[in-house]
Length: 295
Image (cartoon, rainbow, N blue to C red; front, side, top):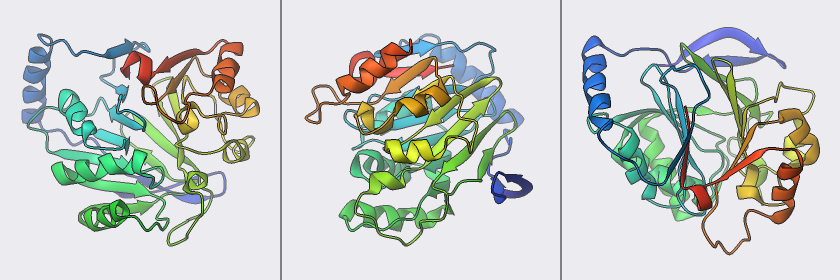
């Protein structure tokens, strides 16, 4: 499933070709049958946005309460999960989007090992055969972290750093941050270690920031193409993320905020909402809109 490429980005880190199209004719037929059946069902709490050019590609930001969880469904029949939220609620969400016979997830990405991003991925690892795992390898001491370490031993693990690329036939995901390997390192604040990535398919693009702070966001300015149609707003819309300088570079049409209803952190912060409004960016919130789907 993984295949090294000779291409380079910026600082000449090697890029990984992680995904390739491998659907069999039989799987295609089954998929078409299931798709027809799905037309008869209505999925509640779902807001969908058509980005144009039907490709079978979908990005779904799940409403998992105070946490982050995103599913990428590629037109090639691959499934990628970025973060899993704070609990097992992601399993029900995935079951509504992935055919019941599909037991494999091609790739999960853990932006950083805080419970509201990691705990749901532990349930995903227990339910599905996860082929590939990408994370930073930073050290933590929680029981959930130890469970995570045990479970990912069954998957192929890649330590994320800038210059890597996840590539399929019709899309790619570039890793923009962290700049160097953090494997085995300890940090007082794990938010600073969040993976920042940019997804591109067709002429559409998304940028995912985890819980990265403004300082980490601004390090990317001038180093990468940050322009994206959709911004997954950092740290649940908190005021410590999404600087104005960073926003000027991304200039999204949509900003997605993943936060829990009535959460005790005050997310999203009014300062962040005002900034996004001032730039004319359409704000979508899982605490208000439920699951948010782009296709």
